Length: 87
Image 1 (tube, one colour):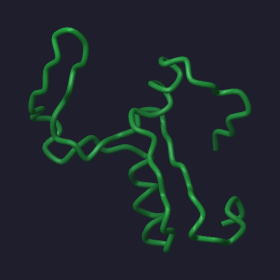
Image 2 (cartoon, one colour; image 1 turned 120 degrees about the vertical axis):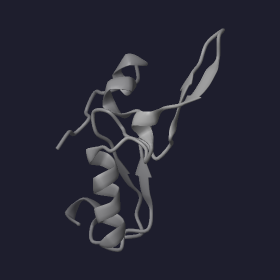
Image 3 (cartoon, one colour; image 1 turned 90 degrees about the vertical axis):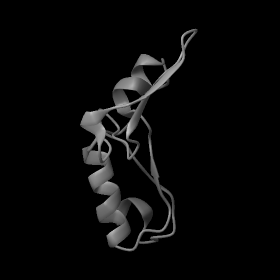
């Protein structure tokens, strides 16, 4: 609550190492694009960030955003991490 000054309408961005997903399939990009069902993702891919989003929404937060593919992919793509507060 402190990070948003008590305002549950402010945007909250949630990220963990792997990201997680509710999708039940895998997509591989590139020249040989492929999309296939993954039997291990019958209910998606569970992650800490998805659990946190659930808890925030249950607590009444209205504008919760999820970083797809997580911090590992963020760093892999060379996106900025300077000043990033990881808690």
